[in-house]
Length: 143
Image (cartoon, rainbow, N blue to C red; front, side):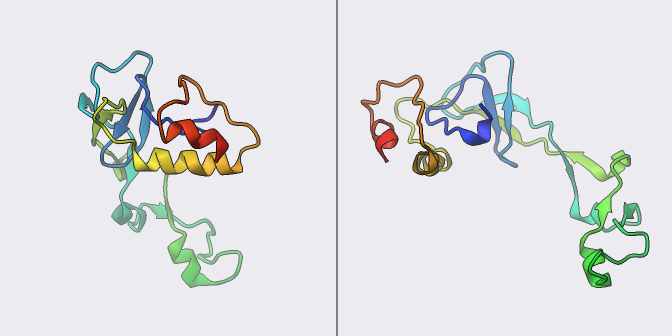
């Protein structure tokens, strides 16, 4: 299942989440921590700085400088960096944290909100790894 179609309420021992950019990194082996602790890893995600996108090393989608609508001001907003210019990219390097809840930890708001949204849209709910006796997760399939 694609991760964006799931809400993982109690975390996953194979995930780390960047505290800076929010990207979830899937690992081949379990993380060694619990309760949203730093795992000792840094986020490897490459980002492009806004300043780099407007630099001379950027290209316009249309060589004439106009978009398909003919509006040259829209072209300035659609300038994108050259993908082959590594000097435009920097690593996020945010601290990666485990996503596993300990007993005292509250459910993450983003995952809980997503679980409500997915249950409202779903024709079928697969609730895995739960007895459905702990709330609010126990009531989610009936939402």
